[in-house]
Each structure stands twice: as C-alpha cells, then as structure tokens.
Amino acid sequence: MPTEALSLVPKSEAKQSMKDFKSDQEVRWCPGCGDYAVLAAVQGFLPELGLARENITFVSGIGCSSRFPYYMNTYGMHSIHGRAPAIATGLAAARRDLSVWVVTGDGDALSIGGNHLIHALRRNVNLKILLFNNRIYGLTKGQYSPTSEAGKITKSTPMGSLEAPFNPVSLALGAEASFVARTIDSDRRHLTDVLRAAAQHPGTALVEIYQNCNIFNDGAFDALKDKQRAQEAVVRLEHGQQIRFGTPWPEAEGGDGLGRLGVVRDPATGELDTVDVTVEGTDRVLVHDAHAASPATAFALSRLADADTLHRTPIGVLRSVRRPVYEDQMADQLDEAVERKGKGDLGALLAGKDTWTVVG
Image (cartoon, rainbow, N blue to C red):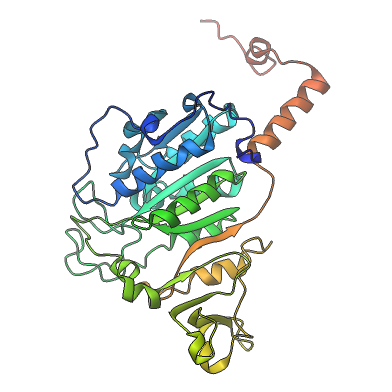
C-alpha cells in the first residue's frame, strides 16, 4: 500500500501478522476496558502496511491509554504528561523514515497537553494521533475530564461539573487539522477503516476513539453501541454519499433503503439540521465532502451531536485535505541553506560573534 505518508518508511522483508506486533508484556488494563479492543485493532491492522517494525514508533503521555507502547512490539516511548505530541514532533522531524503514532487520552491531550496538541495539528507534522476519549480520568480514579458533560458528578465534582466540555473533533478542525475522524472502540470494522485512512494521510491525522471506561464511566457511549438506539443516534459519514441516518426507508414504501433522516442546511441561517426525508424528500440532503478546502461544514457536522444524549453523533472521516507537511518543508529549507552557504559548522556557530570570555 504505497502512499505519500509512508513512502520514506522502509518496508518489511518478511510477511507480518498480528502476532508480530504483540509484545511480551502482560496487558494490564481493567478487564472489560475498551482499550483492549483498540489495541487488538491496531495490532491487527499494522501488518497490512508492510512496514519494518523497527521503523514504527508509538509515543504516549500519561493515563490508562498511555501504556499502549508497552504492548506493541515496535519502538516506543512512555513520555510525560501531555507532551507526547511535542516529543513525537521532534522525532518525526528528525527521522522521516519513521511511522510515528501518538496515543493519548482526553485528559492527557486536552488538559495539560492541549497546547502541544493544537500546535502539532496546525503544523501538519506527519503524525497519527489516537485520542482515546472515555470522558473521565480513569488512571487517577474517576475525576471529571475536559470532555465530561456539564453537570457530571464525580469524586472531584460532587455537585456536578460547572465546565463546558471540549469536543475533540471540533477543536481539531478549529486548529486547521488536515485529517480529523471519529470512531468507536467496539466497532472493529469501522475503527480499522479509519486507522487505514489515517495511516495513508500525509500530515497530522487525529482520530478520536470513543472508548468505554467500565470502572469509572461505564456505559458512556451505550447510545451509540446498542443496535436499536444507534440507528437513531449515529450519523455515519462517507465521502461522496448523502448524510443519512435513522431507521431505513423501505423500498416497499417507495424509499431507497437508506435512513429516514437526513442532514440539511437551513437556507435562512446556514446552520445544519435534520429532516425526515420521507416527508420532505431527499433533494436538500447534504452530500458529505471530506475533501472540502474549508473546514466550515465539517465543523458544523461536529456540532450536530447533543453532548448529553449523543443523539446525531457523526462518526467517520470529517475532514481529509492535502496541505504541505511540516517535515517536507523543513527538509527543503535545510537543503536550500546548504546549497546557498554550504554545510554548517556547529563549533563555529557556538563560538561566534555573540560569545565573550569573562576574565576573573
């Protein structure tokens, strides 16, 4: 699967399997944690990239999800709180022959790490950021997090959280991220498809993964996982397809077999809303364009969901656009500098005109 994003990363000479990416470390998450499903999906997906394992690196911060590098039979770093994007940026810039992945959580990435995250996104470094969102602090035993819904009662907010939550994909789109997607831990096929798209993307790809913490926030995403409820709650985005969801409109009723509900733009306000297409018809229903130059519609889609009930939650690739990759531009500048002035001399630079000697 040759792509621009992976073109500089050496390929593996041997055929790989999921087993090749499993480390010898005991996986130490709580039984039933959604992290297991994500780990299995990543380990099962990586062999198809055909990359040499020694040229794949996972960098994490602090939190339950940040134990991820221990369980991957690749290189990795369990770094410090919130700084994984910064460390990964340096690594990706210095070693363009690596496939660099960041694993982080809603607390790690959006609280202490918020500044590092937005700058990695705006720079468009060739990183793949997996943001596990369980809407709670799991490792420190159940405090509210930056994505917890308003009014959330936890150990640190016994009378309910007063803070409005971050919407991670809205935040990423606002930071001009070139690839933004959302998926769910328990939907293996969808998760793998999104990971595949992220890996192929040249530049920063942020994937928000709704992940269940069955100890401190169990059932946070049940509305999106229960088969019957999910039909009305989940808005699946596919590039080039109408944005439809809800129970199918049967052909026996004159329908097209797609969802009875559609996302439309209000001509008066420009805002997005949903209509019953069995009543109003399908002409107004938006066709999803993940490659639109402007992130405006993708941002509007990211705001469809109700923060409390999760009704009308979009999943899939919200945005995937091409723009210059930071490391490529940096390499071009370095080549130009060498061409103009020749190779630099670090010693001469350090002992240049701006240094002086203090005589006692």
